[in-house]
Image (cartoon, rainbow, N blue to C red; front, side, top):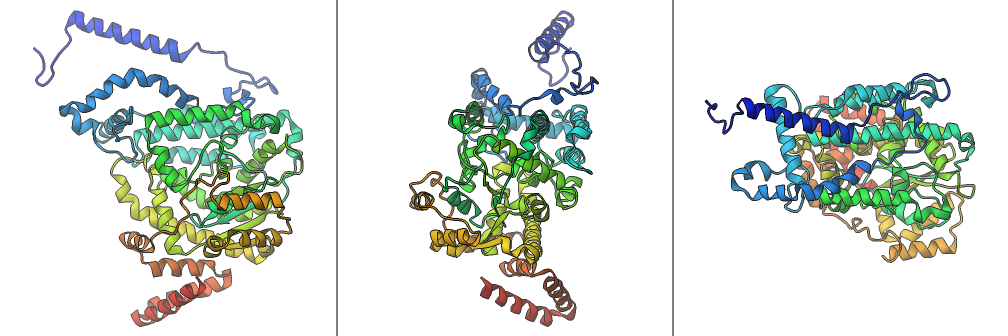
Length: 564
């Protein structure tokens, strides 16, 4: 007799047929995707057993998995009709953090159902449907601990990746988030090993000089992207483009740069992801425009040593990975790796190469490590009012780019915590720049948002003069074309003035005031000795009662307004 609520229960012959069918499907899957068990590879240097990634000669194409997705779309097209079946609306049309709930996202409902089913199983049955292959991941981490893959004594990259693994398994990370993070992290480790293999096979690469790189630092959302793209119009500067940062070896050749097949791989990867979630990239580009041939931030170069920028924001601030990430000690390996990739990307170009770089949330925090690696760096420091910067950055942090990694519903819960976390990041950035300015002030050129928007070319002229560089006529003309909206990369529209009232409302919703934020960042910008005195005075006012606190705050806020 069938169980109550179960529409069908297999009997003897039916059960046997079902088991046979499952066995055949399993065998077909192993045949198609498993492949034959290959003989364990040997290390070419020692002859000892080696991990397969140790044989990589070039950076792998990490877009292959995404490229294969579009081939599945016709197979699931008819399944999308289930979304129109009323009994399943509650499941298939439930919204998610990402834009996979939109009607024209062909695989959106599959992701939503997988996220929901994984959450149910974890909550009620104590296991997850989507799990990270810990054994395979830890095996790759052990590869990084081999002497030939150590970037410097005390390289903590493997330790950082292990902590990252634990952070990926946190409760607020969704099933699809774990899939995406696992794919990304495995790709970073594979690329790291392949780059080391390439340099070991071509030792001359390590002798390629990286002279006087121009590096834009400061808090994010301070028009650093505008400044980056404006300076990038200078044809004498080498700029990293998205596709070459994604797959950095073999070294790109200037003669075949525009026809390099890696551009096509990345373009196909973008198209495949657009097929899955048509509005994902469109929404992210409203906040930060990017593309295959666009110049991009070089933060991915330190991802190869487990130091994350945007993706690290997805993790909890009190995770062991986040605590490790915030420490400046042990990050020497990240910048050794950073320089090694720039040397690979430079080795086939006419020497010397002067790079134009930008990664504010990374370089501004680890500025001492950066200057140890590039002691002659030219630092462009961008500034903008805190009330316009912090809320804008937090909205970017809570955008689908990061929120798609979280379970549905936690975005609202994490909003206040993430805003406070990013305020602390801004304070660290300002304190670090103030500390380094005391010893490397001559290497810094300050760019204020209002001045940059009022007369960009005047700011550029002063910048070049400060660093003893010549602004040639071809560079000036290209920059003027860019400013007029006709140059390369001038499709970016997100530099317009934003509503200060909207940003103030955002801060208030997170339990912060404009005055508090501006005061905290004003104190962070002070030289170390003065900052300590200001912090002590603020504590004294707080202990001395409401009147003392109000007077101290009022004076501080007035100073902040005058400064801006």
